[in-house]
Length: 444
Picture 1: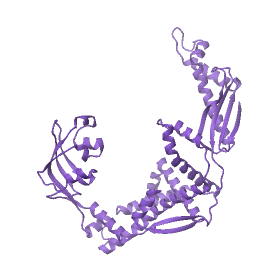
Picture 2: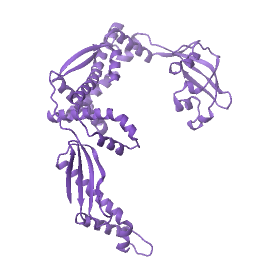
Picture 3: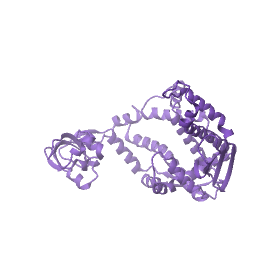
Picture 4: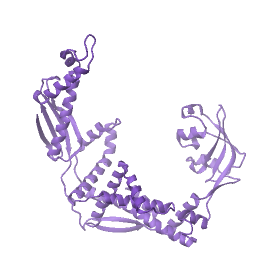
């Protein structure tokens, strides 16, 4: 077997693997012999089918399987042994694949395109200025949180006349059909303003003609509202008459001891002043995590733009299209590629920082993080924290989920990379209100 690597440029290469009969004959003959033992053919006893017939009928597929295994093993061995920092996976190259005939006894040469990561250095300094946005916990923010709590723990009550935030219960009757259904229309969820206005000012017994599509959220919601199957929606055409039977309104919970106890546990908050102080404290903690997430986005944008890493773009586009589970067009790949390539650049930068600075996340750190997360959840629901032994057992149960464990490792690595940059760049803190912060976060 002969493996060669040809550099196309700094970011692309071709790996060629040449196989002669001596490389695969022994394994091929073994598989042919195994097939002969298993194959049954009319007129022959099991295991006595002529070898020529076996080779003629199954030889090519067996040869292809064995060559494919040998190529894959040696291809990735070459990549690992030569410490090639590849992006994506090798792509078969028809241009560099040559052989005269597809049968045992022939010579084969297979070519693969590979994309290589760029070589670069990450050397942050005080000259690098990155903004860290802090959310200001002002009166307006606290008021909004109190309003949300009051609604969450409020009660539905019947009213005489509908308003924008109400739920209207009534009966749909198809004007030209057989569908009738009693259901609820949420007025604030109606997207069409003209239709929404029709549901404002209604009283019990009022009627209006409406197309159910205009007050539902897609096919599944409409089918549920009319108590029919999705497959029957083609029968739910035309206008329906809707008769109002009841109007419900959410009455926010009063700011009293009952609400304070529901949210923070009995006796922990005694009055509105303490309630507001507790909300301010909790929001400050929650906003630290939000600020960190935005900082990591801002940091990524800054260093991706600063380093401007070159990538094997054409290779990556071809690999994305070839490896995608669903068929995607070149146009779709071109549209999504800028975002994908910037994410890849930041991933390369993060990995470089981790490698160069020997950053590690130990399993004990992961376990401690899970414990802290569990303690917060117990506190959130007003439950006492279990003893250390029970907490340890609960944490280990969470870590049985490999996907969840990987997410936590990734999260802690990102935090450590973020901390590294904080210690090496100039942080410019900027205080913004919650509304401004949300705009910044989704503008990234």
